[in-house]
Image (cartoon, rainbow, N blue to C red; front, top):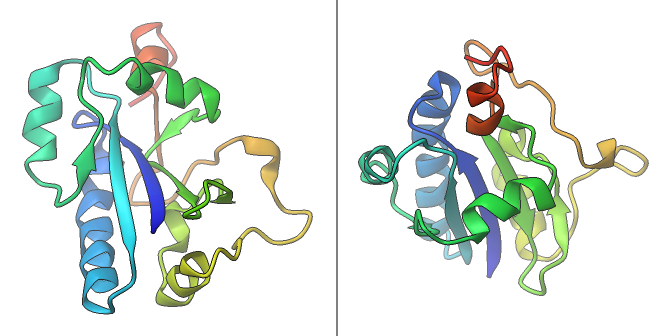
Length: 150
Protein backbone atom coordinates (compact mmCIF):
# COMPACT_ATOMS: atom_id res chain seq x y z
CA UNK A 1 0.00 0.00 0.00
CA UNK A 2 1.30 3.44 -0.91
CA UNK A 3 1.33 5.80 2.08
CA UNK A 4 0.95 9.58 2.09
CA UNK A 5 1.73 11.68 5.15
CA UNK A 6 -0.44 14.79 4.98
CA UNK A 7 0.81 17.70 7.11
CA UNK A 8 -1.96 20.26 7.42
CA UNK A 9 -3.91 22.42 9.87
CA UNK A 10 -7.39 23.81 10.41
CA UNK A 11 -6.03 27.38 10.77
CA UNK A 12 -4.27 27.38 7.37
CA UNK A 13 -6.42 28.68 4.45
CA UNK A 14 -4.36 26.95 1.71
CA UNK A 15 -4.72 23.67 3.63
CA UNK A 16 -8.50 24.14 3.87
CA UNK A 17 -8.54 24.64 0.11
CA UNK A 18 -6.29 21.64 -0.63
CA UNK A 19 -7.94 19.05 1.65
CA UNK A 20 -11.06 18.57 -0.54
CA UNK A 21 -8.82 18.10 -3.60
CA UNK A 22 -6.82 15.44 -1.77
CA UNK A 23 -10.05 13.78 -0.61
CA UNK A 24 -11.22 13.61 -4.22
CA UNK A 25 -7.89 12.09 -5.26
CA UNK A 26 -8.16 9.59 -2.40
CA UNK A 27 -11.62 8.56 -3.65
CA UNK A 28 -10.28 8.17 -7.21
CA UNK A 29 -7.56 5.84 -5.93
CA UNK A 30 -10.13 3.70 -4.10
CA UNK A 31 -12.38 3.59 -7.18
CA UNK A 32 -9.41 2.43 -9.31
CA UNK A 33 -8.56 -0.25 -6.69
CA UNK A 34 -5.16 1.35 -6.06
CA UNK A 35 -3.98 0.79 -2.51
CA UNK A 36 -3.30 4.35 -1.34
CA UNK A 37 -3.60 5.46 2.27
CA UNK A 38 -3.31 8.96 3.71
CA UNK A 39 -2.37 9.69 7.32
CA UNK A 40 -3.12 13.18 8.61
CA UNK A 41 -0.34 14.70 10.72
CA UNK A 42 -2.04 17.66 12.36
CA UNK A 43 -0.25 20.96 12.83
CA UNK A 44 -3.29 22.33 14.65
CA UNK A 45 -2.90 24.28 17.86
CA UNK A 46 -5.49 22.26 19.81
CA UNK A 47 -6.98 18.79 19.84
CA UNK A 48 -10.44 20.30 19.27
CA UNK A 49 -9.32 22.05 16.08
CA UNK A 50 -7.70 18.85 14.89
CA UNK A 51 -10.86 16.79 15.43
CA UNK A 52 -13.06 19.42 13.76
CA UNK A 53 -10.77 19.43 10.71
CA UNK A 54 -10.41 15.62 10.72
CA UNK A 55 -14.20 15.30 10.41
CA UNK A 56 -13.75 16.58 6.81
CA UNK A 57 -11.22 13.85 5.97
CA UNK A 58 -11.91 10.26 4.89
CA UNK A 59 -8.53 8.89 6.06
CA UNK A 60 -6.51 8.04 9.12
CA UNK A 61 -4.74 10.43 11.50
CA UNK A 62 -2.09 10.37 14.19
CA UNK A 63 -3.72 11.12 17.52
CA UNK A 64 -3.10 14.62 18.86
CA UNK A 65 -1.11 13.30 21.83
CA UNK A 66 1.05 10.95 19.72
CA UNK A 67 4.69 12.13 20.04
CA UNK A 68 5.20 11.38 16.33
CA UNK A 69 2.83 14.25 15.51
CA UNK A 70 5.52 16.66 16.75
CA UNK A 71 8.59 14.66 15.64
CA UNK A 72 7.65 13.87 12.04
CA UNK A 73 7.64 17.48 10.72
CA UNK A 74 11.19 17.99 11.98
CA UNK A 75 12.33 14.52 10.89
CA UNK A 76 11.02 15.08 7.35
CA UNK A 77 11.96 18.78 7.17
CA UNK A 78 8.40 20.01 6.74
CA UNK A 79 8.74 23.78 6.79
CA UNK A 80 5.37 24.73 5.31
CA UNK A 81 1.87 23.37 4.96
CA UNK A 82 0.01 21.90 3.23
CA UNK A 83 2.69 19.29 2.70
CA UNK A 84 2.40 15.76 1.36
CA UNK A 85 5.07 13.07 1.41
CA UNK A 86 4.59 9.80 -0.48
CA UNK A 87 6.12 6.48 0.61
CA UNK A 88 6.21 3.04 -1.00
CA UNK A 89 4.81 -0.02 0.74
CA UNK A 90 8.43 -0.77 1.74
CA UNK A 91 8.86 2.67 3.33
CA UNK A 92 10.97 4.30 0.59
CA UNK A 93 10.31 8.01 0.05
CA UNK A 94 8.82 8.32 -3.46
CA UNK A 95 8.02 12.04 -3.42
CA UNK A 96 9.21 14.58 -0.90
CA UNK A 97 6.75 17.31 -1.86
CA UNK A 98 3.70 15.91 -3.70
CA UNK A 99 1.06 18.59 -3.04
CA UNK A 100 1.06 19.77 -6.66
CA UNK A 101 1.62 16.29 -8.12
CA UNK A 102 -1.71 14.57 -7.46
CA UNK A 103 -2.33 12.98 -10.85
CA UNK A 104 -3.56 9.54 -11.81
CA UNK A 105 -0.28 8.90 -13.64
CA UNK A 106 1.72 9.69 -10.49
CA UNK A 107 -0.61 7.54 -8.40
CA UNK A 108 0.06 4.57 -10.69
CA UNK A 109 3.81 5.25 -10.49
CA UNK A 110 3.72 5.46 -6.69
CA UNK A 111 1.69 2.23 -6.48
CA UNK A 112 4.52 0.54 -8.41
CA UNK A 113 7.16 2.02 -6.08
CA UNK A 114 8.40 4.49 -8.72
CA UNK A 115 9.61 7.88 -7.54
CA UNK A 116 8.13 10.97 -9.21
CA UNK A 117 11.05 13.21 -8.28
CA UNK A 118 13.05 14.14 -11.40
CA UNK A 119 16.65 12.93 -11.41
CA UNK A 120 18.74 15.62 -9.73
CA UNK A 121 15.59 17.47 -8.71
CA UNK A 122 15.12 16.23 -5.17
CA UNK A 123 15.21 19.73 -3.61
CA UNK A 124 17.32 18.49 -0.70
CA UNK A 125 14.31 17.79 1.52
CA UNK A 126 12.99 21.34 1.80
CA UNK A 127 9.51 22.45 0.90
CA UNK A 128 8.38 25.15 -1.47
CA UNK A 129 5.53 27.58 -1.30
CA UNK A 130 2.65 26.23 -3.40
CA UNK A 131 0.11 28.30 -5.29
CA UNK A 132 -3.20 27.04 -3.95
CA UNK A 133 -4.89 30.40 -4.00
CA UNK A 134 -2.63 32.22 -1.59
CA UNK A 135 0.45 30.08 -1.16
CA UNK A 136 1.42 27.83 1.71
CA UNK A 137 1.43 28.47 5.44
CA UNK A 138 4.23 27.98 7.86
CA UNK A 139 4.08 25.44 10.66
CA UNK A 140 2.09 26.18 13.78
CA UNK A 141 5.29 26.34 15.81
CA UNK A 142 6.86 28.87 13.43
CA UNK A 143 3.67 30.93 13.54
CA UNK A 144 3.67 30.84 17.34
CA UNK A 145 7.25 32.14 17.35
CA UNK A 146 6.42 35.18 15.20
CA UNK A 147 7.49 33.59 11.93
CA UNK A 148 5.30 35.88 9.82
CA UNK A 149 3.02 33.06 8.68
CA UNK A 150 -0.60 33.25 7.69
